[in-house]
Length: 246
Image (cartoon, rainbow, N blue to C red):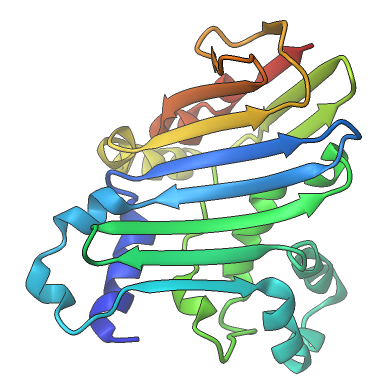
């Protein structure tokens, strides 16, 4: 992987310029399903000077955290038990990186299956914690070059989900933070305003009622979509709270 591409990935992960992040949840009749976060940085790709990518090749690669952890098991064993437990939560995640130089496409996916929505408690924070251990468990694969070094953006909230046959709830609970951290978030306001955060939830039965007035529905009313500027996700994550009734 050449330096220009690595610099490109770093810039992408820090700037999030013209980026769209989509949080997908697919729920089956029995409550199991699939969770994924998709990061579309094609807008940033289009802004890159063409000569800066000269010699680079299009990429479409899939990796699993389980494979990375097996490769680096000796390094992981040196972490505290608490840190090992955090990493274990990522064990069933897969990731995909796709860069198409011709189509100006840059996509990044992380996904996992779950047996119950309860397994998704604070899943965004879990994915972000991987960044804390990258230097310790650096893999021999190219996977680490593809993982955004700043994660998906820490918005100082604890995220929880619940689901039964009658209702689905997404709730972000704010964590008190200091003024310095708030000011730091404000410094990136213009960048965040140029990006979007999308919730896209797919249910096994038609939706009767949604608490969020910004929600839109698929034709069969089984899919709910909500879109906000990324700065709302960062500064007011509770605005993305949602109750869905079936």
